[in-house]
Length: 178
Image 1: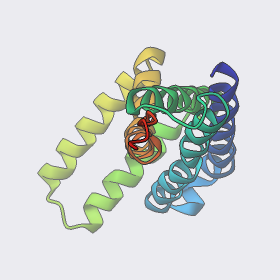
Image 2: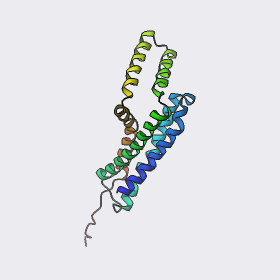
Image 3: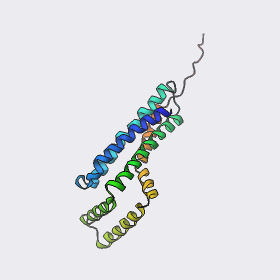
């Protein structure tokens, strides 16, 4: 199981990491909204590895049959490994490549609120909220926690669906009635 989980988790993590490295440095040109769409689409594609990993486990290790619980645990481990790769890549990008990311995102969010017709009071409240978040996000543990929570819901959905689709109970051969 360890080899399957590591293999498929690292493939999914590589997909997430490569796309993040290709898009985050150019987020201002891409646009933050389009960047979110690209990011979550990449997560969906990367978490297809959950399906292939669980299927590989079922067919090659478990003898063609796997319970929902075992399929869920294999899928969840793949998601955790992929998410850890995602977090590690973000830490590198955030602290080395774009340390001003929160400032750029805050400016974008405030401009979007202005264009959306928000009042000055709403914009001031949004600015204060963004400033608090930016300060909080400087703490590496908070940064890691928030970053880990980004791909987790997508991965959990894939894990639940995969476990439901691929789980099979072993059929006990019934004695032939003469």
